[in-house]
Length: 448
Image (cartoon, rainbow, N blue to C red; front, side, top):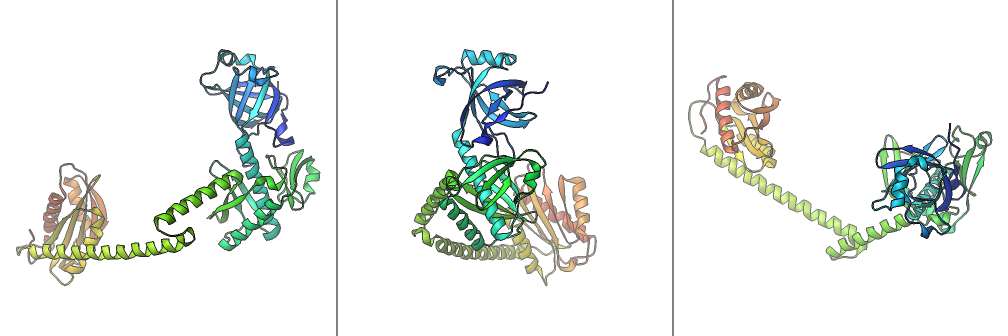
């Protein structure tokens, strides 16, 4: 037998937080929860982009609720289902005997009276943000022809996706100013229920859902939309709206925003952070952008100077290594172990530039990484157009724990065997490279 339809008190009064009712059905849930249905509820279930309410219910409340604190269950989730919302109950730690006894016999719960209490902070936050979303969407639509395509309210912020692909900073500021001006002036917000046919004839921002009856939320004098959520009864109760971010996604624009107390707390936190940053830079908050720009310019200058020092050190070390390569039969190979793997490309590019016009056949570099020893082998000089270094990698992988790949004149990889140093691997690769390249023809010298 189907359960009775629940009377949705939140649709009649978004500010109703405490109510009395009766349990009409119980369903088991994953431990340690139960789902109950009530004959009437002020708890909003998840829907329309708005999260559910939370709070608590007390079983068998007395005339004075303070007389029976023993049998109280937390409501931590409310989901829509056939007949109306289902409230997920949790047994709080340290619950009394009466609560544990009721919990142990869920079949005894239907028919019992309850006192429900909605979390006032969470409800107020949802009312402000859902009201703010309606106002923001109506202003976008009526003044700019921009439609709202989706809405989401989360613990971090709220967001709408709109049909525009971009709005400039100036346009966002003007939009925010207009919305907050309406909030400051105030204005009635009313809800009413009508049949689907009538709803389709109303000047709604979006077509109504195919349900009957349809609940309408109207910002008087601005616009109306079909909606099941909780809303303020006056625009002034939204308090404040801040657009915090605009991002492009899937060809749309997503506007993030905060309302009410959340907007105020975020603004205060931002101002405090800006004040602390400005103080550390010995300047006023108003000059913070200029101070940051100056600091970034200094950082770029120091980075350029540091890069030039590192490049000069690379040229010096490579020059010393080239001078140390002795004269012998076979290809001349430059091998260098490096202390910092982040410098491998710098040393490789520098060595290739310095090798131009010489008889150097190849450059071998190796540096330790957390997963093993990384290496590069680059072919140059007389070896141009010579052997494909990918063949060298195949030979090495056949006898050593080496993985990697590359192109005919440059290969890179990793040696994963523990106990091998970067210097030892560089020397091993130098010898293997000399033998491999040597098979292609005579070279003028061999490096040690």
